[in-house]
Image 1: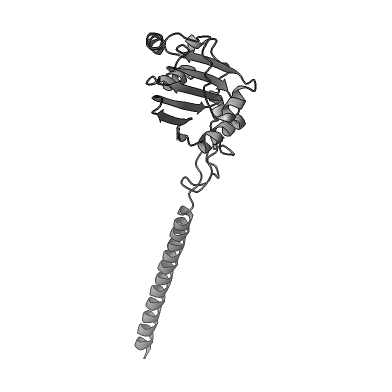
Image 2: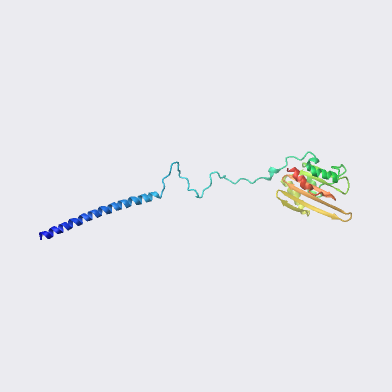
Length: 228
């Protein structure tokens, strides 16, 4: 009986020691696991490095710091306005066009030529109102020649004339910064071809009336010289 008691006590002590060691091992594992979890969770939020700030993450929706507070206004056509008319008719044409006109139908500004640069009433009224204008004619008093006026106008004045041109049956086409209105008429008795060309660009109105003499590129040359 004494021997059995001794064996039982030994088994009990051994079991107790094993439970103690297991408890210590489990406690250590739990502690290590807790620390590892804490480190893992801490790693989800990076520590700010030197000079770091609380700026939004790149790619996030935000307005650039250098963006204007309001859209820039569109460029104005007024920046192309002609400040003054050429001093004389010779300055109105390129050298090549001036030579061609001089050879084809002289003279320039014959005093006997009284033809107006338009027959449209609204245009005639504006030209006679005292607006700044330069008049040039080619040819003598005959049925062969042309008359041109280069006139500085306000937007309101240009609108009145262009409306009258459209109402009068002129074909008007807008190309870029330019509005061009044209009309040609042909008559059998007497045999005459006449027409008008009007160009509006910025604050300039170029009006030309011609009779049997319509040089190629005439108005385009004038506009190119004015806005060179």
